[in-house]
Amino acid sequence: MTLYLNIIQIIISVTLMVVILLQVKGEGGGAFGGGAGVARTRRGLEKTLFNATIVLAVIFLLISFVSALLTVRAG
Image (cartoon, rainbow, N blue to C red):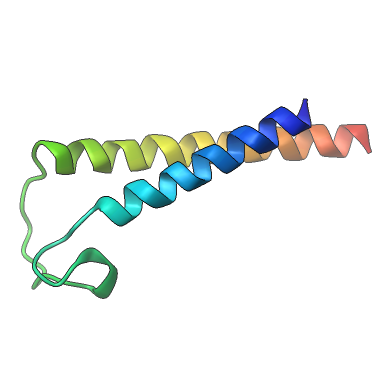
């Protein structure tokens, strides 16, 4: 069971990294603090990537907790 959870966790983590890297904030790029702090509304693909990031992060955390609980109970 923990093997399957670990495989799922790896897949989700790679997907989460890709989704985070696809996000762009302003002209300088999100990774380097681009933009001048201008607040604007997310639309279209940007909103979808933002929501996918939140969902993937929550799923990743839940699987991490379940995997840790199963490891503690088995050991």
